[in-house]
Every structure is written in C-alpha cells, then in structure tokens.
Image (cartoon, rainbow, N blue to C red; front, side, top):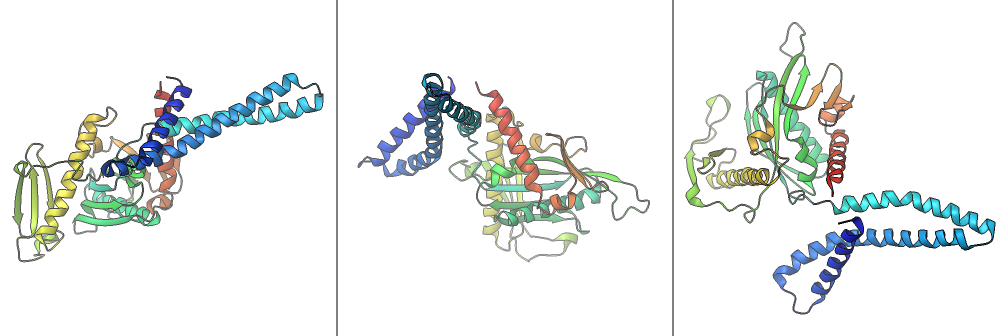
Length: 356
C-alpha cells in the first residue's frame, strides 16, 4: 500500500467517525472511544489536506511554467514551484510520522523501579541519585511523583526504590530509560582516589488498569507481617506490611510504607498489575525482552545503556552514541530531555525505515 492509499483510508475512516458521532442513536458506551479516535485522526486529516492542496498548487504552477508566454511570469511561477517543491518532503515525512503505529501504553502513567546493581554501597548511592534525577525531572514536567517504596542501605543509598509517576505522556517519554545505567567516579569512601565503576538497573513499567490485567484472587498468596525499618527498628506494632505472591508467574511484591494494611495491599496490587502488564507487552512485542528481568538485565556492568562519567563530566547513551558534557544538568533532570528527545527521534526513524 503506497502513501496515497494509506491517506485515502485515513480520510475515509475520519468521515465514518464524523457520521457515527453525529448519529442520533449513537451508542453511549462506544461514543467516548469513537470520540478519542476522531480526535486523534483530525490533525492527520488536516495534514493530508495541506499536502494535497500543496500538490494541487504545484500542478498549477507546473502548468504555468509551460503555458505562459511571458518570460517574467514564467520565472515567477518557476520560483514559486521550486519553493513549494522543497516543502513537500518535510510534509510527507510529518504525515508518515503521524501514521506510525502508536504504542497503546504511551499515554499511561508509569511505575518506576530503580535497583542497585554491581558495585556494593557505591551502586546503592548511585541508585538513589538516579531515583532523585527522575523525581526532579518529573517536577520539571509537571508530573506527579509518588514514592511507593524505598529500601535504604543506612548510608544514604537505595537497594531498591519504587515510585508511581502520573501525568501527560509519562510512559512515552520514560520508556527508553529501562536498562542498566553505569556510573564511573571516585567514591567518597575511596582513600586512594581510584575511579570505580558501579551500576544500577532502571525499569519503567506502564501502569495497568484493572481492565488491562485481570488478576484472579485464587492466583494470589497474600502474607501480612509487621513492618520494620532500616536496622530493624519497629515502624509500627500491627501486622500492616503486605507481601503478595502471584502464583502463576512467581512475581512477588512487598509493601510496608503505609500504616494501613489496606493501603499497602492496594499499592502492592498496583505494582503487581504493572509488572504483569509489562510481561504481556513483552510477549507481544518482538523488540522487547521476553520478561521484565530481561528488560533491565542482571545489573552487570557490561549490560549498560548509559554511562555517567563524573571525572570527565559526560553522559553517554550507548544505544545512539550520544554524549553530553553536562553531567550535572542531566543528573538534576534539566538536560535529560536532550537524551530522551534523541532516543524518541531514533526510534521514530527506525520505525519509518521499517514501513512497507
């Protein structure tokens, strides 16, 4: 199917939706879904109209160039023709981008999980730094960042930290952050000044609604126990902590941040649902790993997607060979968009190249 045939299909579908939404007997249940599709297609149809109008003008100008006897008029027509012709590839590319299949999860909120990998306490300190980087980045974008769980080392590092991030297009922008992040720097505890390499894993999971993932009660084992904080001190004196095991997959989620057992259970189910949804996505998408653990790797230094080299002040994303010499601004969240924008552009270019 060539580009024009695809454009004809889009215009025809937009007309069908216009008629369906105007029908007096429109199904109220289907109305919201049809309205969303109509809203998504409207800018595409407007771009198609722009493209076809431009092509029409080019045809008219081409006619003038051959038919007009006046050399001056012919020259004007020729200038306008080539000016418009130069705009054509950009408009066609924009349309192709608009026609790329959408990731159904792009508009979802996300569950962010950061874990210390190889490198002991330095890896835990780096994991905490990454977690705060995403927290600051979320604030800059006006997203809501809710900490769901933090397991501290006692020295300021995080063994594991989980947050729910909600807002517009959260998963679309953060999904490329999943993987192993490597840090190279001299730890504060290093007396000899030797540079150490450590790693932390990041997983960004689209938050799943109940309609996305159905969980049967019979598939869950729920254990309750008394919460405890770092060092073993008691957080409270009731059995409010919750551990949920999903028996078919073996996934285990534990929550103890809230004093209420009910709230801890709700949070744990939200994380479990997100992990199960990601596993389903992984099966359905050939380019994604077959499971969540495959997605983030083992935490080994060699499986890195990005390196943060503090002595040289640089951040390198190895997937697109992008290096920025502004590590402070990346870690503060200010320059993270530069990396994310480049990753999104690379993904779009790859998918455009794969279009038939």
